[in-house]
Image 1 (cartoon, helix red, strand yellow):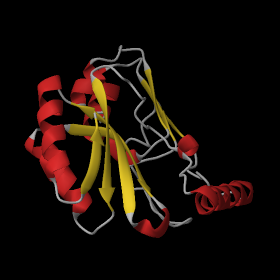
Image 2: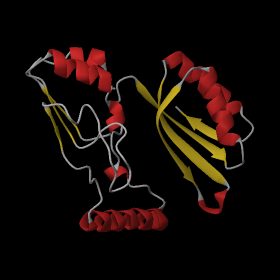
Image 3: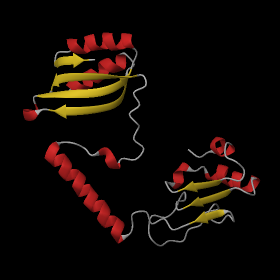
Image 4: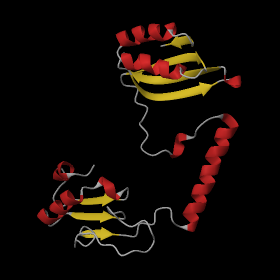
Length: 191
C-alpha cells in the first residue's frame, strides 16, 4: 500500500507512522524517500521480516536508518491485553449463541453503509444446498455487486432470507428480480 507513488504524494517533511503490518510498506521506496528527503521521518512498531519469536538476531536497513524510530512490537502480547481479548471473544460468542447475531462493533475497516447508488433487495428462499449459490449466479449474470448482506435462517432451517444492499441500475434490478423469482427454490423477492 505504501509504495513509491504513495510516498511521492507525501510532503518532504512529513512523518509516516505505521502500526499495522510491516508488509504494507515497500522498503525500497521508503528507503529512497528517507534518503532523498532529509526532513522526512518514519515511526513504526512493525518491520518487514521481523522475527515471530520473542528473541532472535535480526537486522533491517530501515530500522537502522537515523530518521526511523522503531518501538517494540508487542501488539496484544501483554497479560492484560490477552485477558481482555479473551473476554471480548467470549462475549461475542455468547451473543451469537443467544440471538444469532454477529456483533460487528469490533470489526476493523468495515465499509460504511453508504447508500449512494445502493439498492436493497431481499430474497426469501428454501434453505436447500445450492440455492444461495444459484441466487448469486443470477446476480453475477447481471453484474450486480453485493456490498452488504445479512443471511437469516429461520427456525427448523427450512427457509432463509438474504437481505442485501447491491450496486445495480434500475433496469438490472427489475430483470434480475424477475429471474430470481423464477428460480425453483426462491419463495419471494422484494426489490
